[in-house]
View 1: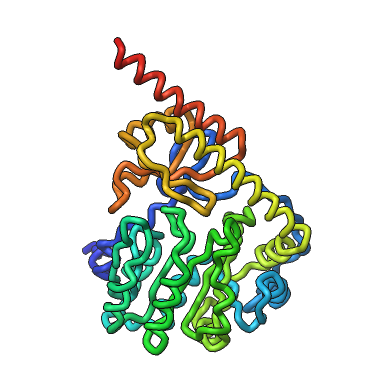
View 2: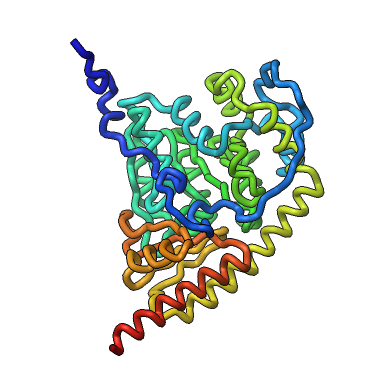
Length: 363
């Protein structure tokens, strides 16, 4: 008799819809503006040629260099496999399945909800206000049973900064009962808005960072949890035995050299210039209904008939992120800011869409 393996799977996993990453969704094109990656690459050389030994539990030289970069103690830092591992580690460490809850505020990064669903942890979704800011009153009224509050700033996919006064109020309200997690994956594009300087002030604050975005190292999968030493010690107990491969830590170490940081900042400035230009050009397009304020390397745009726009771009080799079917994001498309050539191509193809439909309407 054949065993039905699916019957052995946990019920919440049977019903789980996996994270729809850009690579999972796929597409065919030559210009990829769908994953908020850097469209320009770095070049690094591996220091090692032998890989028969396990790496360090935590790469100390990398931690020290990152500590220097953010001006904090090495004891405040845990290196993880992207910021995504940090999201999961916090739930595994602090939430009892079937008992504790997390808060997230949609529209936002889906992995907060998906990780909680995988682990059997209740999710409380406190919808953002119409200006994409937090509903602080509702969040604070949900404090019972909540261990973790996930806040993405700049928020993905909306691109806006979350008001620091609201974040601080939530940190204070949950000071004895919960941990506030600020996902700063995109903060290098707007460093002045970071709440990193609060780490020593608030023991229930955690910040997530990554090298995937401004550092142009998405393929590396290297992130950081930044928190007080007690939280770092707790997470160190449950992280995988050898989480960071030696080639990853070596490249990350090089990426945090003074020269590489200077190159990253130049890349950020170039991207901000391109972003400003794209927004100016999008404002001329009659099919653009609204361009949301952004401080990141992507732009959320509400179009008239987003599905047709998305398909038109895809047909012409430009892959963007369709948000139209997501809650609160009807008719929206998220566009990663690319090189100036990529941005120019995007605008030209959108202008062709206008001309094509104008001709059809006059025929």
